[in-house]
Amino acid sequence: MRLTTKGRFAVTAMLDLALREQKGPVTLAGISERQQISLSYLEQLFGKLRRNSLVDSVRGPGGGYCLARPVADISVADIITAVDEPLDATQCGGKENCLEDNKRCMTHDLWSDLNRTIYEYLASVTLATLIEKQRTACASTQATSECVLHDKRKSTQEHQALA
Image 1 (cartoon, one colour):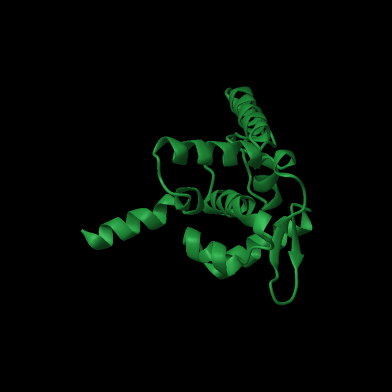
Image 2: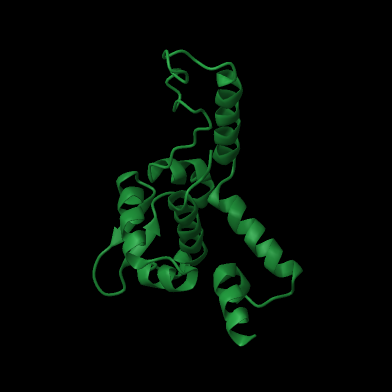
């Protein structure tokens, strides 16, 4: 099982949005620049997030996206499932037809239990939790407020360019 780029980018973009929305709607172009995620990819992700009532769009000048619910009410599991990201460690996709004769494999229950545990953990982590962790990490490094606002990928790329 692996969490693909789709799920990771959706969570990253939603955290970026959550950190900035108090100043008004956040543009996808801004998220794209800060997090180094393709704008067209973000448009696809945010279409799914909007259809699943996790974000609201604001049209016109000064428009962008806002969260549709409080940060404490949006879990990582909500985000990942909204963008159609499967969280499944079974070989059969949960259909119990792991073997050639359409029977379940000996370890099917193990992988099903792992799926449930992962989902329960991701459901317990909210955007509020991630915001607090991000702010705590930045405070402990005594960094500027920009620490909260930028993904490490950009900092790493800038550091490599300077070397």
